[in-house]
Length: 134
Image (cartoon, rainbow, N blue to C red; front, side):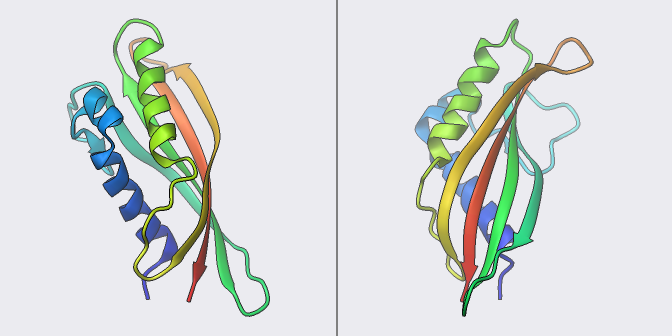
């Protein structure tokens, strides 16, 4: 049996890599582990949390996950465009899962801020998914 969180992560990465609006901004720079000296802009997987959400005869999980967008362009416009492309790619999209069932995938919030290095703009895009195990 595949972990719902792991299977969801794979489906999300596959969707992001094939979403044309995002690819036009970051090409194939979508990382689980960011290289030592990445080219900007790029997207990385952030923290995730799975909480049991069982009901009668259903094993379910509420999975909260963060996807991060990074830019070194002057100001926030570039990182906000990348963040919006991530949101558009995933919000309410029906991702195919082979072993589990995705009930919903919803954008919860996006936070934009400058990192302490003073050079890097960062957007934290948060989603919540409900997934059921067979």
